[in-house]
Length: 79
Length: 114
Length: 253
Image (cartoon, rainbow over all chains, first blue to last red; front, side):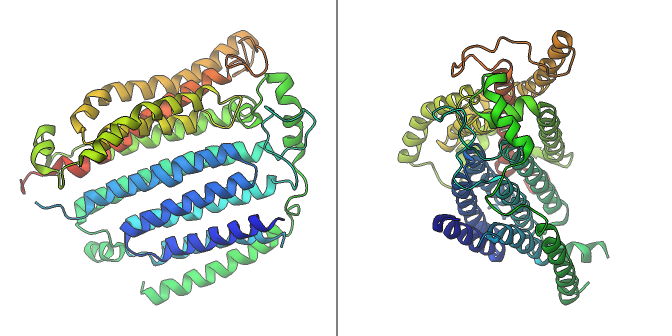
């Protein structure tokens, strides 16, 4: 397998670890967005452009958006 | 190095599971579950990948070209969409839990129930 | 259970799972060697049989169309569950939207964000439509394009126009769109049953390879899935947005 694949695979593993170890949900949603983007790049390299597109719109945009909105609800607003 | 994709897939599964077990916040837990689920995408695509083959899109390549497995890609595609809707459902549950119990910490929840 | 006890159970379980992984992965084909026979067959036949150059789309929406239909209904029922969970409960009331629009926004939207957001709406919708319409030819399709279309509508909110967002994408319309789109998939399948004798049999002309109007029913299903996914994501975001900015407990207000 190529060097590029190895690099991206290692980056994905590191990024997933950082997502899990970031305990505060707000910075974690940003880490998750970056992780989704990295996965998308990995899927492009694995010759799966359909899945990569889906991963980028869903993993890097839609899921972090939902998390942010849920956080906005549960974090105290100024009442 | 050819086992690396499988090792990374197993790592994603285990690290996500570790996050779920040790999580102190339900929203953090949902994100960890998303990481666990992403291990299945990597595993499926790694199984279907073929060295020196191109994506199964026959727009610009000859009909007899070597392409990677389209079946696992179709499975991963639907997998990802199911994953995000399940995450959204769990987030809605977390929001409701916060409304009822006033906390997102799963440990504190058990204390409330006695 | 104490944190340490829980961690101990996790480590024991993780070691067990790891052993299973090693056992299972050792039976897998080596990385990068061969595709499955099924996949190889589909790659060889899809262009001739279905006139779709994107074999992944042909697999998702035709050869394995039934799986995708069931998957679409997972999405459908998850959205229903979220709507039920997040609809205002009895002890809460929703503020009227204008209340929040004037006074409850933590920060006013800056002009730069507003102009940029409004300017992006058109290109985003156009790009989403393109991704959906060419799903059977190039990478893309209903799932990806649907989310892009939904984010185009969400840009209206980002530009600070919550009221316009509610007016552009009213809940009732989105709910109806989602339901009709979900059942359109079933209707296409039933039409195939009537015309060809089997559920989801192609009954439309296949057209010229590479044409936007080709590949039989795949573009039709793509459009249905795109509408379903777009409506689902707009509804989800709308519901979470309302939770975040509109609903508050009655006793506190």
